[in-house]
Image (cartoon, rainbow, N blue to C red; front, side, top):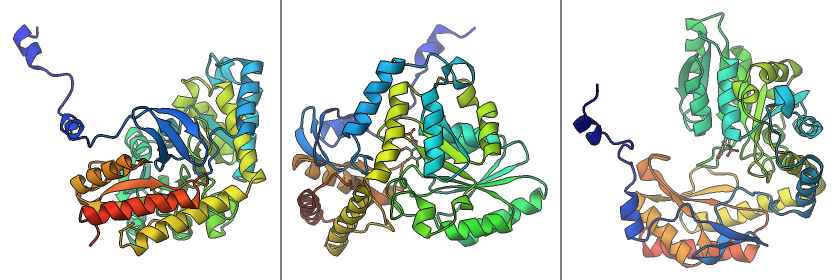
Length: 407
Ligand SMILES: Cc1ncc(COP(=O)(O)O)c(C=O)c1O
């Protein structure tokens, strides 16, 4: 029996990596802040701070609050109510879910698609559902946490290759082929890396996967609506055929203003996941309003191509201003603009400087990114005006100079 004295010494919560209380005391804590209203032009009303320019949201095409999408969500509530009271495989499937999956498949030019209740769960369920003991998953070192967790949950061997390093990926493929010539190999990567904003070298990854007989899974959480002339994603960006990627994963919570995640692929893959992926089988279906909003959003992306052009123009303009001023933006080529500050302290101070001037942007520090690459992570939206982006760039440059981040 455990002694009472021992029990009193056990803490339920381990020590935190971040000194939260200290951050709060110094006014450097700017997380979990609640938006009161979403305003036009990529602005928001934030509790305790008032109106701010939103530079931290993933609403890349500014589709939050789009009338057609809102209408679709409201109509779905009127028709189906607010929940699905069940899992898809049993009583939770609606015609709307099938329509959404058909819409996604059409958008990504695949046979079919499957949806899950979140993007995070999609990666977990797909990677762990597909792989068996003896298989190998090879994952880019900067992949999103949900991919990492999916790899850890799978019973397969889990190895990583250096970020976007194709020679290292090839070595990993050779090792995997040597150790189990008959086993299956899955290579998995983000299309756009969520902290750095750079793009996976898809042509080379695809070539290597074909050479070593490996399956390829790409997470398009940050590339749908952003990459390619019409926002259809990474194959369009590189001018590659629609079947270049075997497992096309994406979220419904970023460019698509809803919640959920999807995998698009061939009929065999989707049928398999619908009967084997545990989070599909054992977790309730996406609510009707979310499914309807997501479906309408794919239509809007195709009907309003100016949004894709605008977000691309906006990030080129904003990143150009910061680069010209001397900021290190790593290899970002997309709407995610990492503004490198060095240590944790200058990053937190620059975030505070921006916050005090009405800009909603957050510091991202270790352990999420390496400690010496602490940064502000700015996300540029189609909804931003050039004036607001110039204002944000000016404030960051002024703050960077004051804090010694820029020389
Ligand atoms: C690359 C990537 N994949 C998956 C996810 C998870 O998506 P969701 O927030 O829809 O669960 C995220 C979320 O930030 C992401 O950045």
